[in-house]
Image 1 (cartoon, rainbow, N blue to C red):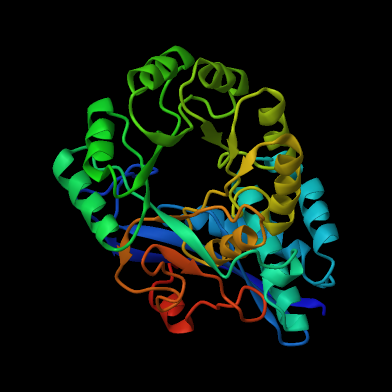
Image 2 (cartoon, helix red, strand yellow; image 1 turned 30 degrees about the horizontal axis):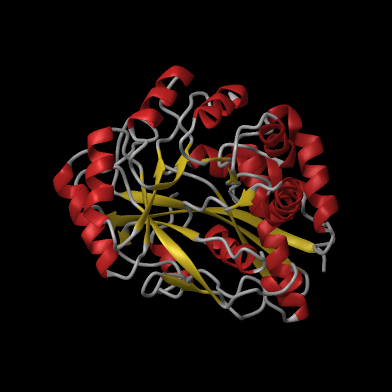
Amino acid sequence: MKIVNADAILVSIPFQPIGIPPWSWGDKAENCFDTLLVRIETDTGIVGWGEAFSRNKDRALAETIRTKILPLVIGKEASAIGRIKHDLEFNLHNFGRVSGVMNGISAVDIALWDILGKSVNRPLVDLIGGAFADTLPAYASLLRYADETHLGDAIEQAIGRGYRYIKLHEIDPGLIRFAVNLGAGRARFMLDTNCPWPVSEAIRQAKSLSDVDLIWFEEPVWPPENYSGLAQVRAAGPFPIAAGENQGSLFDIAAMIAAGAIDIAQPDVAKTGGVTELLRIRALCEASGVDFVPHCALFGPGQVATFHINAATRSTPVVERLYCDFDEDLYGGRANPVVGNIQVPTGPGLGLDPDPAIVEKYRVR
């Protein structure tokens, strides 16, 4: 199976927010989220799909992947996943080990695993150890609303749809306390603050919430590579510390663990080296006594790959689902939670392919 064609396809689909758009990732907030697809085709006619983390109609990243990464895979044997990944990382390491380049390499890796599964007519979960579960619990990863009305509406809607786990992205202690009290007895809560504080402030904020029931406290420290600072917050308590979505490889997660910074590792398959790298990180976590709970603010092949990885993990980690309703769905709703649970696809490879009509309709050119 030689790779004969590869392309990066940027898709941006509008969603219906509850309240104002939450984050801009740049100078203009929009009610849409990217799915940056990588499509790889072999000489046998098999097509694999991958995903690179992207936001705000990132044409520059799509072009970087198209011109800098994908030409290096043409003519390669598609089943040589480990070698292709290594060669891409080695040849491009001067352009960043935690970067858009790594996002693109992650997408290539996901697509190659999709091809491998399709070539042997087996789902990805079977290729990476087999399933511990056919369905997985999902958590509603809420957007940031910054007011009680919209936050309360989102919580009630998510609980009404069957979610029993909810992640907040608020940074105001009053709103955090309001949310947990509102859902008490009906849902459990996590808190992701997206790296807002210096160490001393993160410790102060954690202590101010010590009476609030939180499953974990995620990324409280800026910058995200301040592992010693994160370790100080963890040592001060009172919550388990989760982080990892902004790390680019096994070695970053290993450094976090060595620093005593985390209880929960959260690598992202579309940012942290793809399926191959997440399997290595999973083994490290198991050997180190750290929980492995992948990050997944994704809507395309990276999301589906995460389903397979979580299903093939003995602890069957809860799956993150960024909580928004799209105008149209890349998979026709087949990847969406039902009563707070995800059905792991059983078809070959990832088991789901993007709808070509939706891809074409929302493609960013």
